[in-house]
Amino acid sequence: MSSIWIVRHYENCSGCRRCELACSIHHEGWMWPEASRIRVFMPFPWVEIPHLCAQCDDYPCVMSFPVDAIKVESTTAVSGDRDKCISCGACV
Image (tube, rainbow, N blue to C red; front, side, top):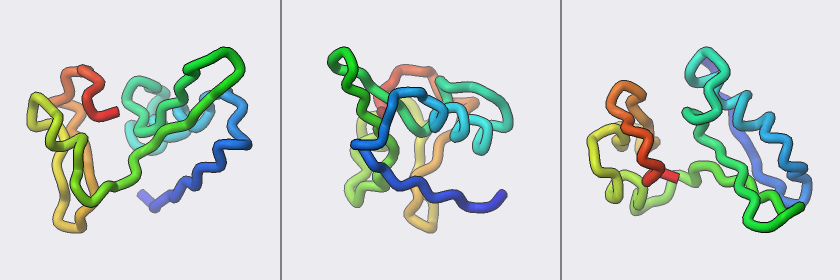
């Protein structure tokens, strides 16, 4: 599978959540927004904020995870294991 890079432009986000669908189709092979590596939050009406993995140096998501479903690869990229995921939301 080819690499796809996503650049955040918060001011252009309309809250349509198509990025969530595209991410799940690319990584999971089917439309599964819950498994998307992108989340669009709406803290207030008409304010949508896209959030995606920033590949932090200290890996707070990996450290906060209650099960071993997220790991740091040898390339230093963070990856998830769908079979081990318990849908707790700690990674987001």
